[in-house]
Length: 369
Image 1: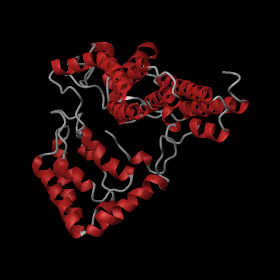
Image 2: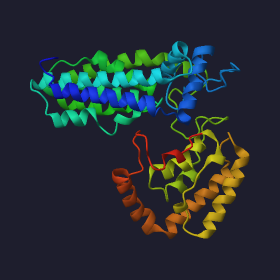
Image 3: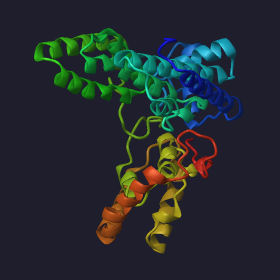
Image 4: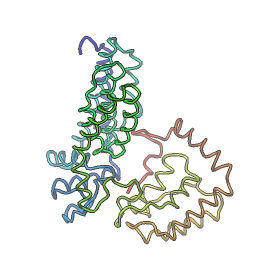
């Protein structure tokens, strides 16, 4: 590895480590999701179950595991066992894992290319704003990003007609699934890649290897879900944390889609609904097209305060559905043309999107609980 890495590469890796160390020490962060993860972790540690029930009661009502999967809460449970309530060890661990994956990626790519990679490319890999700021959180993002890079690294040999370790790919996909369920969607582009780069026989054999490995690892968890009365795969519905289970408020979500154009506008209005904490809903002033809508929304939100921890009643959800239809019918130019443009610019140029970094202008307004 020494003959492949330049001094600048080592310097960049050291800067990555140092900055993240400082972020973890001086800007550690948690969220409502962290709180949920800790509940599941404590149930794993003390009650040997995957549940969102109060760990002190040992009630252990079966659940899929946090808002993603049981993998990350399991990691947190190990930290709780070894280090107590201080979760910095989790942050240090995931930052170290990411650093190791970056080194592995750079080493693998340079070995395949048999040349030293341009320093500018190294900078982009190491200091990507999409991944860099998340290690200070106790959230799934950091581990998921690391697994994604690790997965892509092990697929690189395909482009150089080299042997691919399908055992490792299958294991990576399975671990990723336990961390975040959406990791399973990587199977589709991987299958497409194998189909394009291999002959049909090799494609079938490769796909079969990955499938068998993944199924063997994941099937005990899926069977457990079936045995406890849960769906095999966790639903994508909003409200996984509600007392009576997930029930997506389609009308309410539809209404939000007619006016929100930044992630904070969307999150402030929707995330508290996932937990049934309707008192914490924050509706941006840009949500209203006239004064009558202000009154109507306030009345419905006031009614919702009587249903905390429960799904939004159908009657109230229908009110928001009607409001969404009204917006689409009467403000077509805004909903269908101006709003998509605003979202585009918000995604690319919005200065208040933190991407995990501290110091976002209005990040602290979001209340996930």
